[in-house]
Amino acid sequence: KLLNERFKTTEFNRTPGSGAFGSTHALPQHLIVHGDLITPQNFKYVIECKNGYKVEIEDLFKGGSTFYQFIDQARKDARKVNRDWMVIYKKDRKKELVVVSAQDGLQSPFGSLDRYLLIKGKYYVYLLQDVLGLPDHYWFI
Image (tube, rainbow, N blue to C red; front, side, top):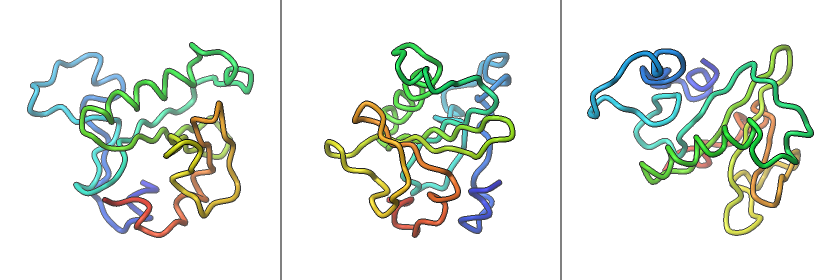
């Protein structure tokens, strides 16, 4: 909903193969969409949306934590369609976070934002509200 409002579209939709539906229904190959959201055709990111999972700050120091599982899932889906990946994470009664990959070493894909966390020199974490304020050229190919 936030992405549709931000980009003045209705093209962002939950994929039929995500969440509980995806684990209980087998989709034909031609209907498989990568990531948790259907996005506009020229959108730069494959998006994984995670809500309510218990991710704690110390999980950032555990290689096999849920946090890194989110990233692995997003990265695998993005590779299949040759796009960048993004994880949007929401914990109950907390602000939404965006996790993206560092570009060209430590370069942030959202270089104009100054509020972020850098994890392991590979992952940037931003507030979703900050990222949504960026111009469209950060979002589209």
